Length: 321
Image 1 (cartoon, rainbow, N blue to C red):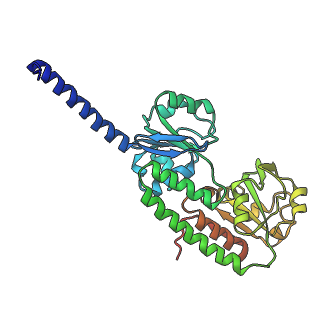
Image 2 (image 1 turned 90 degrees about the horizontal axis):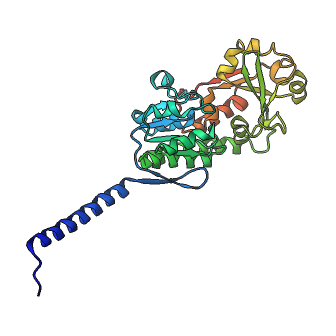
Image 3 (image 1 turned 90 degrees about the vertical axis):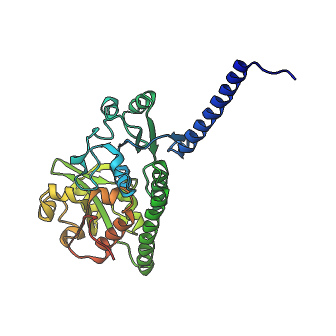
């Protein structure tokens, strides 16, 4: 048998050791990666969620609910929950007017947002810079809301917490279904969602919006009819719709001077909603975010439309039994 020279043998041992060590490191690296599916059904490989930038309010709320708020290093201007978050975190601008430089300045390892963030070239620039970007569909049902919650939970290594939040959402959905069952066969209330920013911005939101989806969920008839997206509010259209109740974001009602200011807008006093001063307001993120609190928001919307008189206000901070 041929005996290898000592120096050759040592070199062989060193090579084998390096190979084994590399294999071990590679195994650890693979074990630490997380794979999730994005809005385009593509696999996104996440290697670190230590520094997260959130590109929309729903994502920010979910991240804090999952207990990884300390990992969030920046958020967009639509992030309003938890309260005071915009004052605590650097802003990267609005989700439809982003710039790559501002996001990259925060040294993120993971950026999460909705699939329609703009401009799209910002996403390309982030990925070219080596940043992992996860874009997800904006939910319009509880099922898709749970799926997004679970996906983000997996992405940041908090699957168990995400499952707990999903169970809480399921419990609220069950309560809502009980209420809906009790109303089976009763006539639906006609609800009209008004998006207001003072007297300069007065819009009606249609069936394909988040508030429109919530109307379907709570068993209300959308008085906007077949309107898609948003349309300017006109006195003639509101009077023709004859809504039983007006629904607004809380900030919208505040911007117009409360219920008295609302009913001064052309046509709004000449409907059943106006004559009975039936107004429901919910915090915007709470009602339209389809986040962890969306089951509670639907319950509040149902209460406001079907179980309350006059003005009903829900902030999302109220404790529930």
